[in-house]
Image (tube, rainbow, N blue to C red):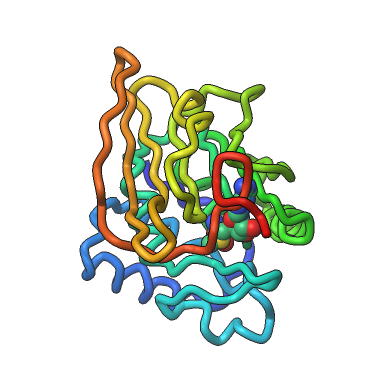
Length: 223
Ligand SMILES: C[S@@+](CC[C@H](N)C(=O)[O-])C[C@H]1O[C@@H](n2cnc3c(N)ncnc32)[C@H](O)[C@@H]1O
């Protein structure tokens, strides 16, 4: 199913569609993910001064020392979750709200957690302005997950931690995937964990990557 809801803002549709076409050419296969990239107005989720760069495939600063990931990274991580449309997904690291907005078009519900109050508030406002109604943004330490709303059908972690936080594994539903960057700071790998129907985990390395730090009880210690 391809979600074709309008986002209410028609501007910059052509650069967005071109970005999506470039991601298809570079190997993203999931047409639902590509359609979401073509529809979510990334320029409305980043600082105004950077709007001219919104549809380049690059990560960009969003303030408070944090970044919005490159669209190719968002697309690859989203595709790796193997979503079908009915899921409740946990995102750790709301940041700008872009990954959450992409997910909102692909699943039933998104629970997103951000540790920096200013970013959480800004993302909430931006998502509201886009008319996104199936994403809830919580302020807190996402390395602990959200036990009160678990289990989650899929989990995406968008900041790099030393290892996959145990609470997140325990909150992943059988049959679900968790995707995120883990490992030593200078050798992060994009990891995909799968929990099978018996509750056993398997682990796959999807390739090297570079993300800002996952800070928290089950991440790196905050300075
Ligand atoms: C690369 S940015 C996120 C990109 C974001 N998904 C987007 O679409 O813009 C990583 C985010 O993770 C947040 N973060 C780091 N540690 C966290 C934690 N323990 N819990 C929640 N958020 C965390 C950072 O504050 C930052 O906003």
